[in-house]
Length: 55
Image (tube, rainbow, N blue to C red; front, top):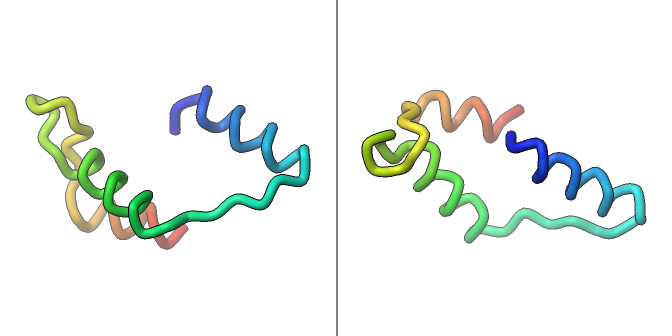
């Protein structure tokens, strides 16, 4: 994960903010993660995507 995103999440948690993952977050992650690198994605497989979501 991007270090800026990790730091932002850590800061919010440290402040006691309640964080939520909603369906739109999962859809956007799916689109980016499985989109080919030639089209500005990460080019990962559906199997890899599922593993990331279950961790």
